[in-house]
Length: 212
Image 1 (cartoon, rainbow, N blue to C red):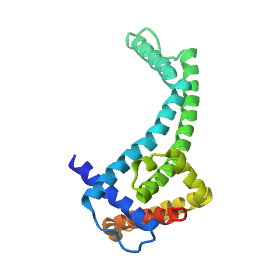
Image 2: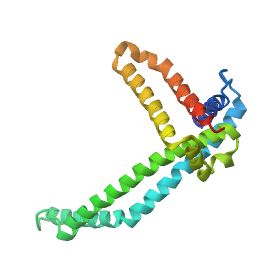
Image 3: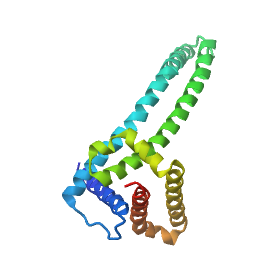
């Protein structure tokens, strides 16, 4: 519980860094413990909402592609065959129905995983815009407005948003890889990693400042 509460304060501070980028403020924001806590809690709600939507859709897709049904056919067949083998009645040979269920399950999983990847990437971008909206307005309602978050991406420019966020990810990944691969630099990651996170939040704020 204590870790969660501290995490909310830190998350709120990161939102304040986005806000400083939106306002083009060169001053490093100070810790406002209670305000950071409230903002961090709101960010927690935003994260849940923006990822529960794709998660729900993925569950629906999994149901429609009959993942559960195919899995149960395979499981029942395996249990039945295993019991027969244990009793010495037969060798372990899957029935035609089970073999077909395996093929269907692979197709179902492939479709569901592809949908999940696409949705979670899209909603990751939307969540980034939601955090910027939270930083800009301080309103949880504005941050939870998925439609307006999507419009913000269009206002800034879909290509620009994708390029900037991908560049942020690549820069951080490269620096972290260098730090982790060079033994005497590994200790520096403890110091540098928070600054990389600040850099990412600041960049998001500057990106959103185009339409703020």
